[in-house]
Figure 1: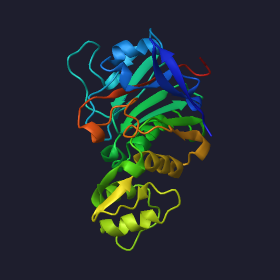
Figure 2: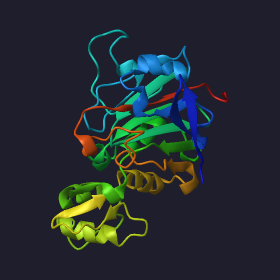
Figure 3: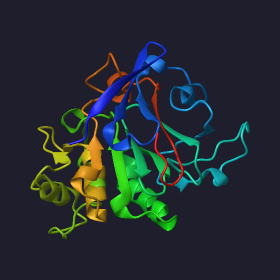
Length: 265
């Protein structure tokens, strides 16, 4: 089981994961708001090239070569980034959605993904893994850390939303795959299910973090290659912003810096 650690920078703490110890990386807390990646990269590697996108809750994953030139006022719309050379700092922001950081131990390349329920329903993390594989990655070399996000027990969603995410992990057809309630009922019978029951009619509880781990394991990653942070944005207001809790559009940033093949920190 991977361990998570608090690191200190400028008197504030951010979170790191042992699985990603070969890369400068961090899941930052609300205390760093409103600092941007252009500032926060100094906590990881002050000389790395900052890369980020305009997030739109989709499943587009881009490489830096796809982005506008540095200092451009335009930003590419996407919810994932993939490095294409060493020394690139990839960033995503989130409030309740899952920030997902991926590293390839063989090539040194990385990915940063914003995986909310919409992106997860569109399999954004498997899309990113597929793009890594197209660049030469092997599944057995990947390690994945899913950062602080809203926990399933406090994330009430409609049955339609739960079914949209759940369909991405069902390996066998249920009675009617078009029937959202039937899909959710089938999902709840799974061990360690990302979909939990809810007393309210037409509602369910959804753990997007677990859904992403399910997707990764179905791709072929082993359980020990994926870690989920033991922190909930909704339940820890002292550390994290939560849009579901406050309705305010404030975020925390998560970033990782690529390296070359065979290199280590």
